[in-house]
Amino acid sequence: MNKQTRDIAVLLGSLALLGIVAFFALRQPAPPTPAAPPAASAPAAPDAATAAQDAAKKAANGHVGWLTDDLRNNDVIAKLAPTVKAGRDPFKDFRGHVITNTDHQQNTPSVPAPKPGAGTGTKLPFILPLEKEHVVVKTLTWITPRMLAKTYDLHKLAVTLVAGSVPGSVVIRGLNPDFDSAVSLVGELDIAPPVPTFELSGVVTSGAERYAALRANGHYYTVMEGEAIPHLGWRVTRISAGSVRLDKGKQTVQLRLSGGSPS
Image 1 (cartoon, rainbow, N blue to C red):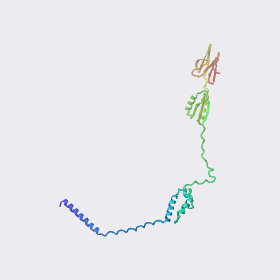
Image 2 (cartoon, rainbow, N blue to C red):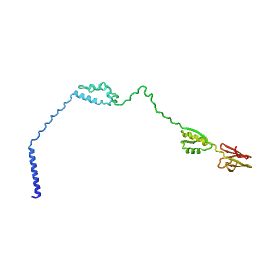
Image 3 (spheres, one colour):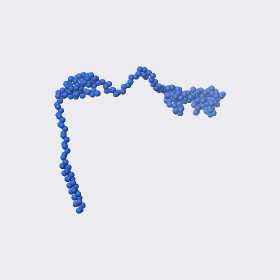
Image 4 (cartoon, helix red, strand yellow):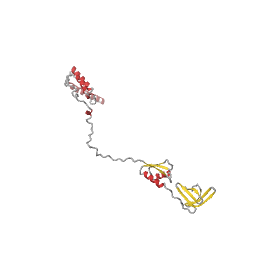
């Protein structure tokens, strides 16, 4: 027997076995069919009283709600109540009760009222007032505003320095302690410089021209009347037969031929 014949025999045997099993299964009695539940009877048509009650409930449902304001007035209930002809009055729970906002705010935390005399002993934190800006006007005699501004920069003073309305004056603005330091520096810097050591050597007068030969700090100068001594800033304002007058700002020096000390 070859392989093909053997496969056919196995297939036929399987079909025969399945047929036997199906035969015995069909001979067993079928399980009883469960009885169908009794058909529900159709609802009876509502009578006129029930229809009126349903209509009243629907009308009330249109007004009932925690957030509506209609039920706050008993007149609305009084108008709807007569429409109920029979059964339980659906407005019985609402009649005589006016809904207010307090009914919906029961869970809102309330702030307790202060006790008598409370708060009288409370101490508030002390707050320092804002310091007012200080302003002062100073007149400079021996230094310039630029020299003063450079000095403020060197000392890192947080002040404002502007020119004043009067020539030679400055306006200083700022807060303490820088303001006090800035004002103090003006007094320290704006002072008369030391007077050089002058000595009058001679006076030359030739017609309208007049010359003065003098020595300042060891250096010799010949200066005409009205000219300034180089690099010193002192000016020869007047030359007479035996004296010379020198001026610088508010400083004045009078020299005589007899000596070199200023007078």
